[in-house]
Image (tube, rainbow, N blue to C red; front, side, top):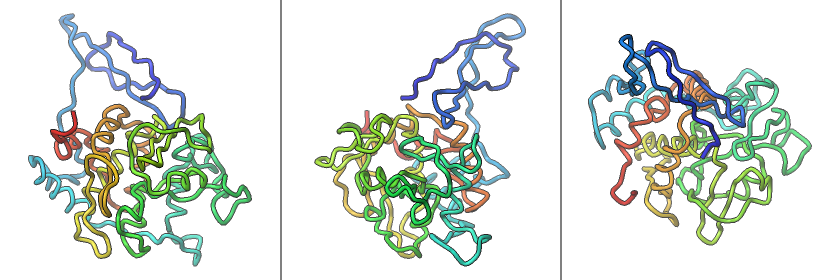
Length: 303
């Protein structure tokens, strides 16, 4: 869980949202407040209930629930999805995954750096696999939904190059994570143990640092909604309770639901999302409307 100090203030009900800066530039989170109405009554802050629907993007999903909502979102986020090349050296102007990640995960304070997902380290864009001289400290492209667990280990598959679940990562930690599924517990990773990442090879699980748990969870919910078995070379991706999942399945659902609640959408994630939309032309519904996670993925097996 992010180490934040939540601040309660008495403000006008007409005040705009406020943010506090946490211990990393990735983490900028709204603080909650109470407000005073015109007659002096103290009331709780308003709870957003309307669907965020930029330019009618989610029109086809309005008033839908459960699996019907999931099906509607699948159609919306599949339509117009621009497939990127994994690597393209033909022209510096041709967009590929490398170039995309240098845009989406750019350090907001150093434009020639990217933020690495698992370590939080800001690293030169040029210090990447095949280019830099740092060896295992170079950064490369992490598939949050492992290719081997997705059954899409083919560069021509949409899921292979979908930047909603691709992130810059330290090569060493990417290798340590491998195809481990998500859950909590284990021992610190050898690389940057202070960051808080853990792995448990016996259980087949990996726990990322607290500051990105929600980001990862929402990426997984996106993948399970975007890929319903309708794309060539990509099967129906499903999130299940537990680990040791078969191909095209990934766990653990209960853990991901917990992370989604513990680590809400922050400013870095929002900005990254808009950049992805400008490049790939589709959105992650669970960043725009986080309450849809519960509507679609809640399970009686998850307390």
